[in-house]
Image (cartoon, rainbow over the protein chains, first blue to last red):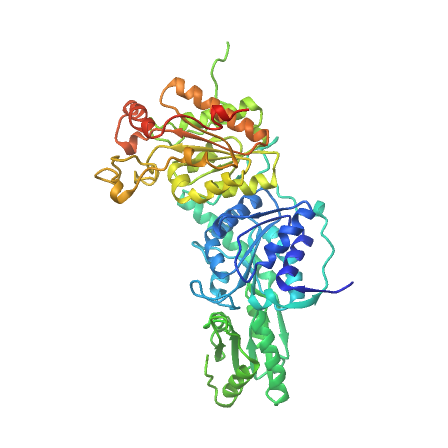
Length: 357
Length: 249
C-alpha cells in the first residue's frame, strides 16, 4: 500500500469518503476549513452531496434530516461552532440518529483564538447539550489514527444509533503526516436502517423524534439510552507506552499525548521510570486499563491543552487512590517537552507539581 | 351506500389535541387530501415543528421527522438532499418559522431547496400560552403585549410571504386563509400547486395559511374567523405572491 502525505483535516475528509459518507453539511470556521474545502470538491465526484449551510445550527439540523433518512452523514466544526451545534446534537442523541461530528478544537472561552486547544473535553464527554446523553468520543493522536478512527466512527454510529465525535485539535487538523488510506467501503454493504424515514411504502410510518410528553415514557427512554451507553463499554480504546512498573504515569490524549510521549523518553533517559497512558476513546473512558496502568505508580500527571479537564476524569477513574497532578497550557499555547519534563522532575522529587504556567 | 366524505388515507384516525375552533385541523386535512390526490402518500416525508402542531406526526399517516424549534427547513434540506425524488414538506407555525427559525426558512428558500412549507400564521404563540409572535399585528393583545403590540417598543409584524417572494430560489409563494369555505377551497388549490411544483423539481414553495386561535385570542370560534377576515387580512393580504401574474410565461 502506498503512503501519501496529507494534512490532518484532508485525511479525515478522505477517510470519511472511504467509509461511505456521502453527505456533508457544514459552516466555515478555522482551523477545520480544509475539511469542507476538500469535501466540496470530492463529494460531487463520488455522487455525494455537499451543502454549505447558513449556520452551524442549520448544518447540524441538516445532518439530523439526512441521518433520519438512513444516510451516512457528517459535519465538522471547531469549538465555538460546536457549541452552536449542541442543540442539534442533543436532539440527535434523543432521536438516536447516527452521524459523525468532527471538532478540531481551538482556544476558548468565547471567540477565543484559532490556535489549538483541548478545552472542549467536558463538553464532548459529558454530553454538552441539555438532557442525559452521551456521545461516543474518539481522540486520535496521529494523522493515520484520524483516518482509522473516521472509518470506525461511522461503524460505531450505525451500530449504536448514536452521534460519534472525533475530538481533534488545531495541531492535528493542520499538520501533515504520511498516511495509508483504506479501500473504498462497498456502499451496498452498509447496515440496513429499517427505522429510517424513506417514505412509508408498504409499511407503517416511521418517525424520527425525541419528544415524549408522558413522563414515564420519557424515563423509560432515558433508561433505554443509559443501557446503550453502558453497552458502549466494550468499545474502550487506549494506548500504553512504558507503563509497566512506571513510578509516574503521564496521561494525555491527542496532541498532548505526543508531547507526553516525548517526555517519557526524556525522563527514561534520565533514569526516571515514566510511562504514558493515552485514552483513545474518551467516552467510554478506559477505566480498567487506566487503573491497571497506574497500579504501581506513585504519581500520575495529566498533560493537557486546557486549564484541567481530563484530570478530573483521571482522578475519578483512579478512584482517588493515587495522587493525580495536572499540567496544562491554555488559549492556544502548547506545552513544551522541556516544561513538562521540569514538572515530572518536581513531582518525582517532592510529590508536588507547579500545575500550570 | 355511497361514501361522499371520508378521512384521507394520509391522515391517521388519532383524535387531535387542537382546541375547539382552531383551524389547524382543516389545514391538516387539506394537506392530506392533496397528498392523496397526488398519490404520493408512500413517497412523502413530513417535518413537524415545535409549537401547537408539534404532534402533527401523530396525525399524518406518513413518514415524519420531528424538528427542533425553527429548524424544520434545515431538517427538510437534509431529507430532500438524500431523497431528491421523494416529496418533502415542513408544517410550521409563526413562532417557529418567523421568529426562531427565520434564518432557516430564508436560506432554504434562497438555496431553492425543492421542498414545500406549509406556514400556519395565527399571529400568536399558541402552545406556550399566547405570547406575542413576530406576526402579531399592531395593537393586538397577547400575554407579552398586554396593552396591545406597540411598534415603538415591540416593532412591526413580519410579512413572511412577501419577504420570501423576493428570493430567486422560491418558485411559488402564496398566502391563503381558511376562515370560510371559499377560502378553504382556494387554500387547497394553493397547497396542491406548491406540491406539484415540488414534484416537477422547480424549487422552493411555501403556502402561508392564516389560521385562527380562539383560545389565545380570547374570542369564540366564529368571532375568530371574523377576526381573520376583518383584522388579519388587511395586514396579510391574500394571493399568490410569486410568480405574479405578469411574470408567468
